Structure formats: structure tokens, C-alpha cells
Amino acid sequence: MPELPEVEIIRVGLAKLLPGRVVKDVWHDHPKSFPNSPSDVAKFLLRAKVTDVRRRAKVLIIELSSNYSLVIHLKMTGQLVFDGKERFGAGHPNKSLVGDLPDKSTRVLIDFTDGSRLFFNDQRKFGWMRLLPTTQVPEINFFKEVGPEPLEDDFTAAKFIEVLSRRKNSNIKAVLLDQTVLAGVGNIYADESLFMAKIHPLTPVSKISRTKLVALHNDLREVLRLSIEKGGSTDRNYVDAEGKKGSYLSFAQVFRREGQPCPRCGTIIKKIRVAGRGTHICPYCQKPPRKA
Image (cartoon, rainbow, N blue to C red):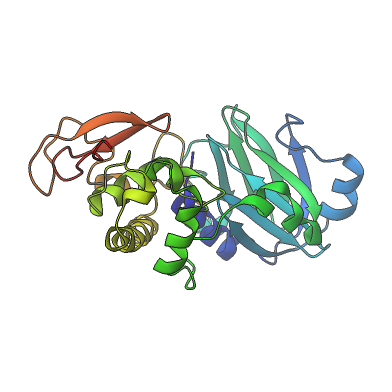
């Protein structure tokens, strides 16, 4: 599933490409992917102008001049790919860096009046694109329950420690993955930040010193920013708004590096299971919690 950096990169791309474009038509192949009434689509989506593109956690919000918004969750395999002359220049032979679109994974296709198009592709059909009044978007259960954004300026180390303390008896990796505690962090960046802070993922929050938690706060923000800089982590289906793949995984220090030497101490990186997820650690740098 795309994590915060990947969704943010898509948002940045779409925010440059979509505002000002007017929706001409929309097509979808599966009601689960586009659960909207034809009357709402006709009244609030068709002929509406895109005014902004925002993100909350792993969810994208395309705001419209009709005072409605398209709320989009990519889930595990979702892609949003824009196709228009701005991508390559007029007359360029390439139509898409992910192949000819639409294809068999295309669930929603939005045509704009200038001839550009936005494709919502989703191989596994778990993602969705909902049309809602913009004022109602914050009332979606997911948005009411999701935790703070880790890259916001006001997300200080003190705030980080405060939200973690709500699950002080849980292991730190499970807490980092809990979207009600922290927005947008998934498996890749949990592993990377815990390695950087030298914290074993099975360590209960209550057993981690404040100094270590401050370091984890800084390291988590650092790996998220680095991933955004590198275009995200291309893992299976992820591409940005122009169909390009990210390069962060080539900079990852432990994720998917099992059997390779730790870049810090040379110990062989291992893969274990924590919080139901494959987890990558250095057994030397990340000492397991002591038993009571």
C-alpha cells in the first residue's frame, strides 16, 4: 500500500496538473471503485472545475468548483495517472510510462474539456473514488479517527511522545503502524526509522527512553522527507501522477535487505514478523527488549 510519501508525491504532481481543468465526462467499470449516484455525478462532477488537490494521511482529496470533492483512497494497488501534453510535450510518442491506458486495471477515467485525462487504475479493486460535499469530507469516519500528520511543523517530539503514550504497553512498531495514532506511516518507513533510532520493533513504548523516542521522532521525519525527495518507494504498483517510479528503496538501509550486511555494523540483516508484518532489523544495532 502506498504510504505517506508516495501519496504526497501524487498530490504534489496532481496539484500542479489538475487545477483549472474542467470535467467533461467520467467512466467507471465497477461500482465499488466509484460508489456515486449518476445524479450526483451529473450535477456536481460534470462541468465542475478542479480548484485544489489535498491529502490527509493516505487519502487524496480533489476539490471542485461545485463545492463537492472527489475523495480517493488508493488502498493496496491504486494508481492515479494524468495524461496530457504537459507531461511530455505536444507530439511526444509516449502516452504513459505505465503502458497504454486505459488498460484492464483502469477503474475510473475522467476526461477534461482540454483533452487531458486522469486514470484511476486498481488491479485488486480495493481502492475507491467517492464524490462528497466538501464540507462533509472531514466527517468521514476515517478522517475523524486518523492521527496527526508526522511532517507537519507543529508535530514536535513532545507531541509524538504524547500520542505514542496512548498505547504505552504495545510494541513500538504496532503503534507506528496504527493510523489512529499516526497518519500515513506504513511498513517501509516504520522499519527504516526504527533501525535509524536503534530500537527493536518489539520493544513496548513504555520501555523506550525519552531520548530514544526523540531520536525516533527525528529519524521518522527524516526518512519520510528523503522518500519524498527520491520520488517515493516503488513497490509493486506505485507510480507518481505522471506514471514515474520512485527510487527510495535503493536508499533503504534495512527494508528488503535481509541476508545483507548492516550498513552500520556489518551484522547480517534479518527478517522477522512483528504486528503481522514482515519486519527488517539488524540484530546487533536493534537489541530486543529485556524480559521482565
